[in-house]
Amino acid sequence: MAKQNNEMEGGLHARILGAKIFRNVICIFLCFLSLIPFWIMIVNATRTSVDIQQGLSLIPSHYFMENWAKLLYQCSQQVPLWKYMTNSLTIAVFSTVFTVYFSTMTAYGVTVYKFKGSGFAWAFIMAIMMIPVQVSSIGFFRFMYGLGLGNNYLPLIIPAIAAPSTVFFMRQYMQSALPLEIVDAARIDGSREFNTFNRIAMPLMKPAVATQCIFAFIASWNNFYTPSMLLSSQKKYTLPMFVQMMRGERFRSDHGIIYVGLVVCIMPIFVVYFILSKYIIAGVALGGVKE
Image (tube, rainbow, N blue to C red; front, top):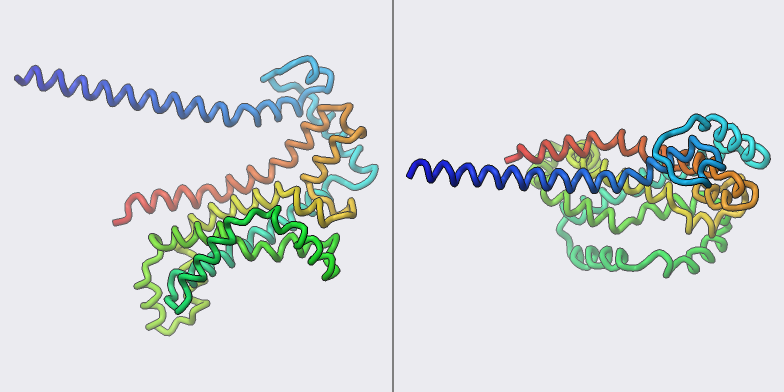
């Protein structure tokens, strides 16, 4: 009987080990599929245009600095590359701050305050989330130009305050991570509402804030549709608009320059992710030991 039990336990352990190995293999394979396009792009940035046209390679070459110098020279003929990067960074940073802070504040108000019409307000926010941006783009374009805000960064930053999807995410996280007893205790101690939100609620929301900062920054950094409608001066172009310009005759003949430009465009996204990912990991670890 004991021998039979040992054989059953051994078989169970073998099946569990096999399942773990299978899951690990699948995860490694999916990670490889996700990373290989970025690796190919980085490798092509180190190759000459002739080498790129001859076929695919996974081994980096040594022409990156040459391609980089060519890109800077081509950009210096009209608008320097750093100008496009500064434009994109200005819009992305302010949009991210506005999106995350005011969306967290909205979610805090809907979660903490129980007022007449709060259900309708939440339903209204969810209804707005279902409306695609393209539906209101023409009206938004005419409205901004009617206000004299054409070729201006404000229409790309101020509307970021209203982000229904971020509000939804923050509210769902807040319902499990923000005990209302803490808010009530802060009120009893004489804390003002804004002070309670900024010094108690926001620190508890760090993992969610970091996650939404990444999403908001990427969305704003990669945004091409709205800036292409509003920005007419090339000096105000963003990096995605610059990438679109690289399809022109001035860059099309040299694929190495194009890939260097693409690498430059995605590097800030990686930087933001690696800076904020530690807060997400810390939040997951904290949630794993929370009672």
